[in-house]
Amino acid sequence: MLGDFSYCNPTKLYFGAGAVKHLNDELPKYGKNVVLIYGGGSVKKNGIYDEVVALLESNGKDVAEIAGVMPNPTVEKLYEGMEIARRHKADLLLAVGGGSVCDYAKALAVSVNCDEDPWEKYYLRFDEPTCEVLPVGCVLTMVGTGSEMNAGAVLTNHKSKLKIGHVFADEKVMPRFSVLDPTYTLTLPHYQMVAGIYDIFSHICEQYFSGEDDNTSDYIAEGLMRSLLHSSRIANKDMKDYEARSNIMWTATWALNTLISRGKSTDWMVHMLGQAVGAYTDATHGMTLAAVTMAYFKHILPFGLAKFKRFAVNVFDVDPTGKSDAEVAEEGLKALESWMRELGLVMNISELGVTEDMLEGLADATRIQRGGYKILDRAEIIEIFKESM
Ligand code: NZQ
Ligand code: ZN
Image 1 (spheres, helix red, strand yellow):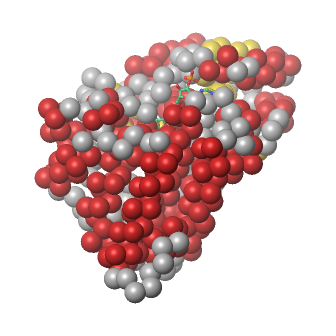
Image 2 (cartoon, protein in one colour; image 1 turned 90 degrees about the vertical axis):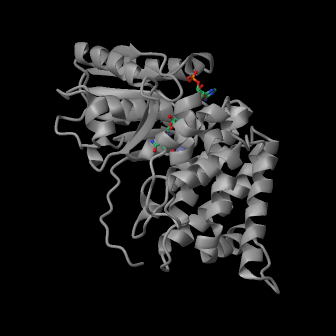
């Protein structure tokens, strides 16, 4: 491990069936005024909303609500929430939902006391908060993003056709606590479950496919990927399998809670390509990643051959005997593709609504990262989008 780093993750987790009762441990730590944040209504249908509200009431909280946080939350929705949280003098923001709701709560946490436009400050200039950051708690209902234990908050700006994630350096932006109950995820439709599974896998790959040094983080990453492949195959056949779903939930958290990026460089180019697709189509995050992955990986394979070979052998059990490095690496990518197809992921961006006339705009919306095995230029980005069609 050649990199130097600091590591601190202050989020307290409560994991397991019935874990929501631990709101009784957390709620008393904060003032009376809670803003309860949720999405388009799944939590009302499956009863999670009622359970959380009952606990807020028994803890004597005065609750205001921000409802209807959409998948891929928008900057307009942020402005609306800032008004509500300010009026209510919020002491705690409680997010009940998936990554979109958790991300939104974090974006709100840094914006309520901010005296500038938060989009300009945090998403265009990537500044850190200089105001008081409100505390956030999460009750997670959709697995994938890792938002429950990280300081990332992704927002979409439809006017400027940009989807941008800010991973704040300030630990105060991380949720103070998160409730992870695998049974809360059992009502997810299959499409969302597999999109989440692929999001997890992609997060691990983004941190794995970078750097050449021998690094503990990469061995942890391989273990997480193997666990995910195993559990995802079980959950894909039987969505109600608690053991598999709980493993997937825990893997998601560790895939993106900053641990496996310690001491190494990272890539994140699949996410940049996927986010551009998201900005134009509003498609489900995990599917945007799946749809661009194969074209991107095939493009960078020659530049990161040693790592792609290691991936094939250590993650997909490809037998390297008698084969060239390139053959082993390519067999690994074939195994990845066949697992993706087995899950039923969307494998091309046309299916997500991308048309030829969007390609130049997609390239404009793609933020080039420098940590991968090949720094892409604009022509390569267009080429990869074309391949992904
Ligand atoms: O809105 P409701 O009605 O709640 O429905 C949601 C939504 O339609 C539904 N859902 C959630 N829990 C459910 C459920 N349906 C039935 N039963 C349940 N238990 O699922 C749909 C998708 O939810 P969403 O929160 O949008 O999904 P996800 O968790 O994938 O979050 C996606 C957002 O997170 C960002 C993405 O870009 C996207 O904006 N990301 C955040 C990251 C981070 N904080 O580090 C990293 C990721 O790479 C990602 O970019
Ligand atoms: Zn992601």
